[in-house]
Image 1 (tube, helix red, strand yellow):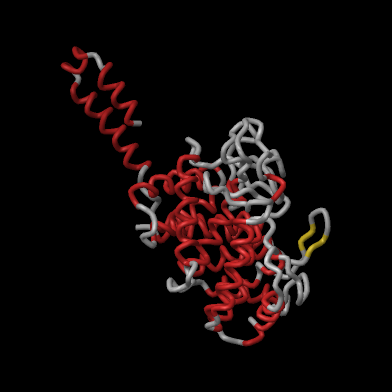
Image 2: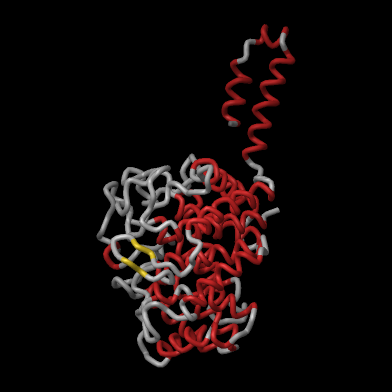
Length: 392
């Protein structure tokens, strides 16, 4: 936009400007107004309105929170996709404390009797994700039934020496904040210690040398994508949503983890390094590609990764962790892209990549395509919008 102003200023006919200075000033003023508007956050009531619209669409579509999810097969509704939605709903409740949100979360948790769908001894993080909301609801009303099953499950993990459970980076978001919450609730740093051991194994050992690039500060989704695997353009395959999961996990860990924890600074540094690496990869339209460093491999708009990056950046701005001058413009650009290009009039969200593990999954991603699961995309969007709402 500034470039356009300079071009107009340099090329504007001097004779014409002599006789039409008002027109010249009007054009410059309009362009400057466009710049200022592009750099402004939407009003808080506008942000809240779009969050309520998208959430109402989902709640109206799923009035029975315990109803099974049927795609290629039937699944219980406390799997990770629905659990991520409830993470977003609880974030929405923090800025818009309507009882119907808590009632909806309670209906879901009570239907499942505060259990994990994988059983009491499951180690798969996808099944543990629901516990984030269970524990948040416990903190609002400390009934033992709300937390005892997940505590028992994590204690099974704690009783073994196995530390390699998080063999794919999505698992970090699904389970790491559960350990954080249990450590806070029970004032037991053993949960923090085991959480770090599992995080460090994923970061430094899975796939040979870890799933975190020490040079590029981005994550490979799992061992299938570590070098020498390359994208068509020769770059590493850094999947957008996979990196978004890790960024969200670090946010949700830093929110509650005591700063005195011996690994707090490492989590914070990893978070900052990721944000710095993601910042220049934003597309001109505000989104991030599904393959962060290869726009030719299913390049295009995508909501979930972009939402998680907004969530991570906005958290850092709101808590003084990231430089407001550097990151605010990026957040505004991305958030405006989401609400302009993805939100349907009825609240349905377009450009959501369905479940999978890499750029080619669930393609094509577009404005009208219904993903295999609608819930987790909305959860990511609600988390992003709730942090944007808090921005000044």
